Image (cartoon, rainbow, N blue to C red):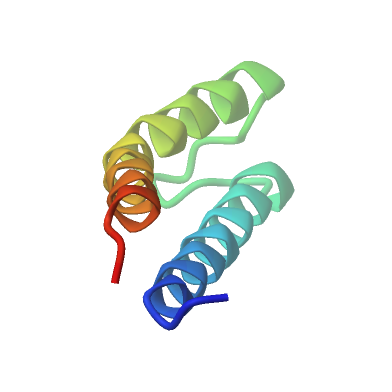
Length: 73
C-alpha cells in the first residue's frame, strides 16, 4: 500500500466512526433535545438528515480515492 492511501484510510475510519455514533444516538434515544418522544418515523427522518449531512464528506472521499488511484508517484 502506498503512503498516500494511509491518510485516506484514516479519514474513512474517522467518518465511519462518527456516522456510527450518530446513528446509534438517533436510534437509541427515547426523547430528543426538544423533549419530543421519538417515534420510528421521527427516527427515520433524523437518520435521513444525518445521511444528507454525510453526503459531502462521502463526495470528498470518492474524489480523493480517484485522485489517489490516478496519480502515479
